Length: 331
Image 1 (cartoon, rainbow, N blue to C red):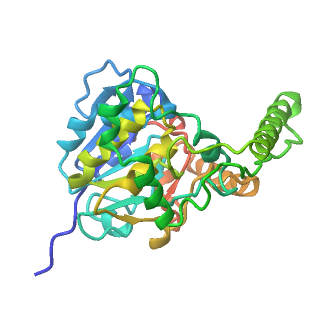
Image 2 (image 1 turned 60 degrees about the vertical axis):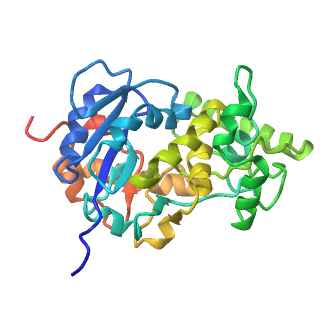
């Protein structure tokens, strides 16, 4: 007799307080995931499926840590955590998600992919990889840091997986935003500032070889899946990274890489494409994905039902989708 399908609980994480979208998220997902929890910064309401959290969006994994016990109480073999402005393919529900993500068994995590920050592939990851400290002021580092692999242990793990080809951070690829011909002075002033910022960072890393603060990898972290049996270990590592003030899209993928006895599924193992506007940081990709999302938003006319019905089936998700443009069905 075949084993029953693995069940996934859904956690929707808001970077910023936007209470208006609580019923919209519920309308989109509650019929597909019986276990649904929304993490809302500075929430003061009493909806049972919303958990108040607090902090800074640059470290939104701290929201996961604060809601740890609420998340563990959800009914599911796996925990899928997505951003509130990430729209998941409608084919994904509590019983299809694990299989569609290529998850086999109860020891497999999912993240779209992992990027070696010592290569000129991702400017943000490289810049952030030396901005935190393993021994910040006020931290009892000896007690805290033993909850994560040592620097050398982490280095060996990442090197064995070809995710740390160099020991310095001197290779930064410039990301040059496109000029906006019809955007006027204000829009192009922002483009100019962006270009100058990336140029300065490029040359700063050329002139000086920056070391890793700790061996890390970069990864898009608005969609992750964790087996419930691995969730506590995952949180323990993240607790250390939070104490070090590590950037979220280094902390989450690095914690996944360092989890013991864990397999990793990625986008390459699925039948889908990424619908993320921001990653990789490429102006042509940015423009093309914005076109896909803008076209879907326009054709749906503010109707959630039409938005889901018209979702392009070859994408795992689309991000970002501004759900504030929609209302709950039936309202």
